[in-house]
Length: 341
Ligand SMILES: [Zn+2]
Ligand SMILES: [Zn+2]
Image (cartoon, rainbow, N blue to C red; front, side):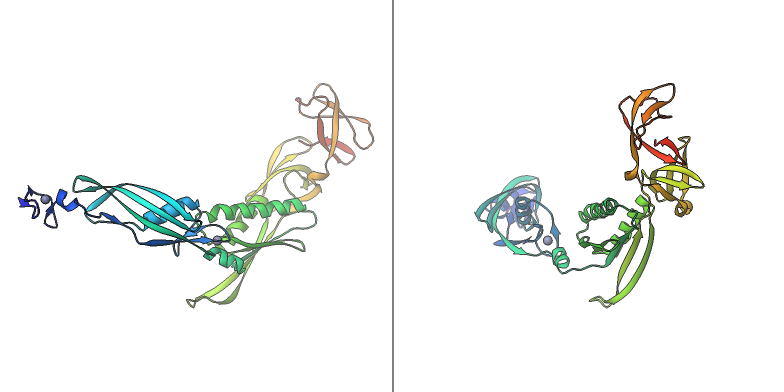
């Protein structure tokens, strides 16, 4: 059995020669530095205390910075922490941190204060972005058959992909995106991002992809630095278009990395087109150019529509749930009108 050198109490729990009560008496269990700098990026608003940057609420960043700088006596175990901040001016906050602790089974509480100073700067990502840093160029291209809307949609897909991945990896960003003759160029901060984006577009549009890399110099560490160009050529057709394949006419339902799903216009049967056969598809009518006709009466298994070009009445086989007054898409093939499913 040991005893406390101050009060003489006999106990097993001796810290620095003292019993727990005497050890805790008037003792600072936690401490904070006089001040802590929190850097705020003036470009994106992200905050950091040094190398590490995060997207978070400024209030949270202030409290987290104070708690992160907290020193706790090695005899104490942290149970709970609460912090409050008081604004002195827009760049100076006093934060008081209160900690509930356990010292050898004895509950204790202590508090400490520090000053958080906000410092305006530009984070590493923004400084690279503002400096036009890029490692990959994604060139989206397509013939005149590819609508501008589809090009923009492809750009948006890349933007969404980068947004999603940059949450966990701050090195990922789009340096710039610009419309050029025949398409859009997207400059990306990383080669892996360029690869992922080109794969995304290939999978979505069944596009053709080519890549070329170029040695652009050496990094600070002396390793070779490459810039990679990904060329993504969108096919002339998109979902909704009427295409010709093997002498028949189909509505293109969807494209994917493995090929296309199509519906035969004459019998409404669905079939697949293999990826390797995709180059054989020929656009017959773009989705946006399909004519619309109005259902004017119904019979057994067919309806009468008003032919849009000459206002004559035509019988068409269309789904039974078509109602009078419905507008339906139609396509003319070899002088006959067909309903587009
Ligand atoms: Zn004692
Ligand atoms: Zn920034």
